[in-house]
Image 1 (cartoon, one colour):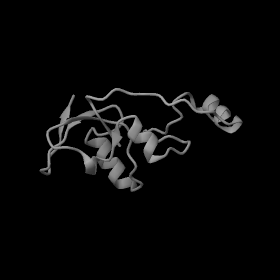
Image 2 (cartoon, rainbow, N blue to C red):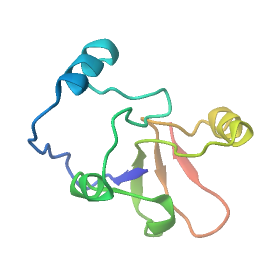
Image 3 (tube, rainbow, N blue to C red):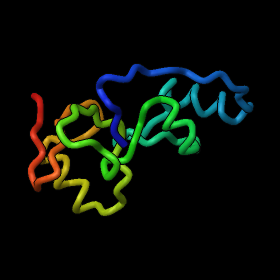
Length: 103
């Protein structure tokens, strides 16, 4: 998931179950794995509301911040890690085969 750099983060208010509260106590407020994926399930609507989109829906020439990597292939995750792509990194999307990283 990536977020368009022009959009700001919004927070949606909702009730948390006792399980969710305990999980957040253990994992911290973000409750995310090292790849940026939330442990608690999130709907696509919640992600869209925060301005997140799939890289496949990115607009050429726009700047994006990587929010999470949903890939389950360990070799691809390792490749992305060594390429410097991961949560917290910024990039400019190009329809060509290259991605320009901002360091």
